[in-house]
Structure formats: structure tokens, C-alpha cells
Amino acid sequence: MPTATDYLRPSVSNGRPEEQALIRQWWYETHNAKGRLVWEYYLGNCYVDAVWFPDTDGVGNEASGRGAPHHYPISEVPVVLCEAKARLTPELVGQALMYGVFARNAGAQVQSIVVFAEAGLPAFKAAAESLGLQVVLSAVEAQDSEA
Image 1 (cartoon, rainbow, N blue to C red):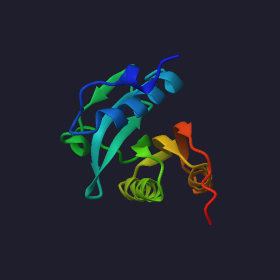
Image 2 (cartoon, rainbow, N blue to C red; image 1 turned 90 degrees about the vertical axis):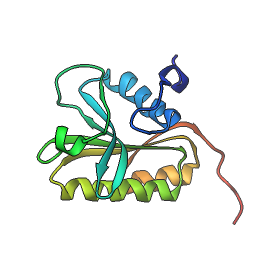
Image 3 (tube, helix red, strand yellow; image 1 turned 120 degrees about the horizontal axis):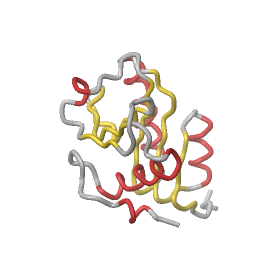
Image 4 (cartoon, rainbow, N blue to C red; image 1 turned 90 degrees about the horizontal axis):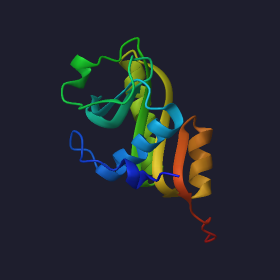
């Protein structure tokens, strides 16, 4: 079974290659790389790691985020927002939720927001999912028992 390192490629649009590999692995293995993935999409004074356009023709199309809002507008278009970090944290969850608001304000039809991490606590995963996010973890950490 392939791992994220099998999807590691040089950085696209100043993104982190390790984070992009997590997203790329999910895109290829879960969705057969359908549509177009635009890296580092400028949205609301921030850069979303990736915006997936699932209804775009083609397979395996990846694009730089340079000029993305002009070249790949999201208004009235179905999209999936993707944000990745090494660890699933409350900050990552909040960041992804904000991107969802920004995308909807820009008129996007946000089908889902997916957060990716190499590891995360079960409580953080459950909280993110209860807020409507899809969570993809490479590994689930043992729950911290400190109170």
C-alpha cells in the first residue's frame, strides 16, 4: 500500500512538500485524481493549501496557485478545500473553518472541507468532525490522560 512519501514531489507554489503529499495521496487513492487540484489558492487574505475542483474534466491535473482566483474562479463552482499540517491541532481546525467561510463568501459551492495530518488525538479528530470537517489522519495518537 502506498504511503504519503510515495506522493512526495517538489513543492508547488511554495507549499510544504510533506503536506502536499498527504493531500495528493488522498486525492489519488480516494478520488482517482479526478478533476483539478490547485495548490496554495489565495482566498480571504490567506492561502488554502489546496482547492480541489472535482467537476473539472481530466485526471491528475495539478496547478500552481499563482493567479488562481483569476484562472480558476470558485464562484458558483463545486469545490473541496484541503488544509494539511504535521499534527491535527485546534489551530488547524479553526483555520479550515475560516477558509470555508471565506470560500462561501466568494460564492463557492463548498462540498466539503478536509483537514489532513500525519497524527492527531482522537478528541481533536472527533471535535473537528462534529464541526463538519472531514479528517484524514496518517496515524491516531493515544489519548492524553492528563487532566
